[in-house]
Image (cartoon, rainbow, N blue to C red; front, side):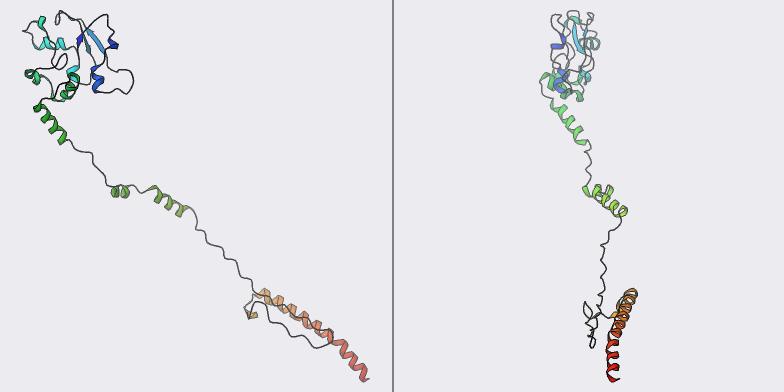
Length: 234
């Protein structure tokens, strides 16, 4: 948007028309301004214009643009380029590109002509929408992280089996013989009716040694009785 330059006014303090449409990300206006002193095209005023506007209609000096487009008209009545320096008249709508009309409408606070609006609506309706990918397709292409971790854990860590404590076989306690009489009958083995043959070989060997020792003790205990009986008969 072009306007007359005033030396007493700082250009930076004048609101930027492009910032009304294109909101800057920073607090400072990013648009560059310059002053055109070409009195051959606009002999009565110096013009402030934009150099890096996002819309072509607002780029450059609008008064110089009008003078170059209308060389047969006097420059003393130069009104400036329509849509940039001023709102366009109905006969000047054709001079503004349809893509520039939304910005022109906001800057100059005028409605978009119906024929231009229908063209813009048709263009926007033909624009392809953003494709929507179904969640099932995403899951099939990219498995979830949970399943990946499960597979990693199953392959990396060995399976832990519960340790079973071996059942100890009951050990039979041999009975000791009486010193002067008949041997005491052996009590059944602890732990029920578990047969001796089911015990391991090492346990059977220990049991046989204990039984042999017990029988030897019984024989020694009966020896004095036999000697006493022989002495009495003699």
